[in-house]
Image (cartoon, rainbow, N blue to C red; front, side, top):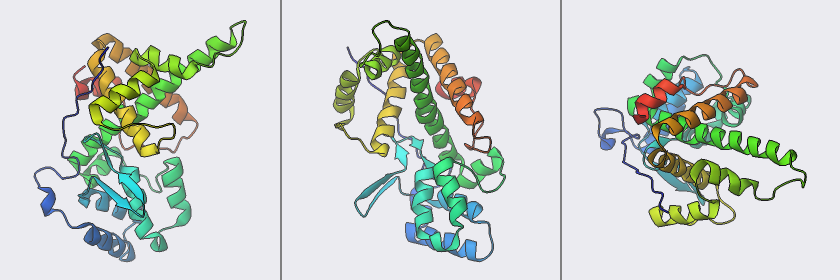
Length: 258
């Protein structure tokens, strides 16, 4: 059995038509963010502008790795937002920051077009990769796990301790152990029993890419529809949550040529 994921690079950390070298240095970006807030710009708008100017795909600070660009093509902008906010916490409202970072609630109304314009076309494209390849993939996994839980409750002999393995087998055609071994072969990254969130999201994105390559188009479309439906149900409970894009099956098919 062989499952691999293609990972073509994407310049998600640069605006279209510009080299990364033309973007300001991180310290200058942080300085401009602070100055913009002090000059009266709303902190969330200033934050998104800073995200658009940022040029580093990852950093290591005080022993923590900030991985903004997963697999070279999926941009987790909230991780970068957290990094930037840590530099200006004295000039941003703590309550609004908490709701943004932990609940995904935006402090002001902003349509998807303005969000995309502020962070730049390349970063927004990579942001969509993250939404589909990580968040929707996680929702698909949860949906399958819920089905398995229901099946287990109906069994006369009770719970099946191998539920987690069964989800991987159903979605990806292999056990978790087999998949992590293939992930190591493909990336050189060994996942232990305890995995950091950034590492887990990188693995999830790898699983997404592997699934696209392995499944036929009808199955990919069906699983994507299921993941989108699950994510929608989850977000109904948090009506103010925003993602920065309208996710749908047609856009997914265009983006990934399904």
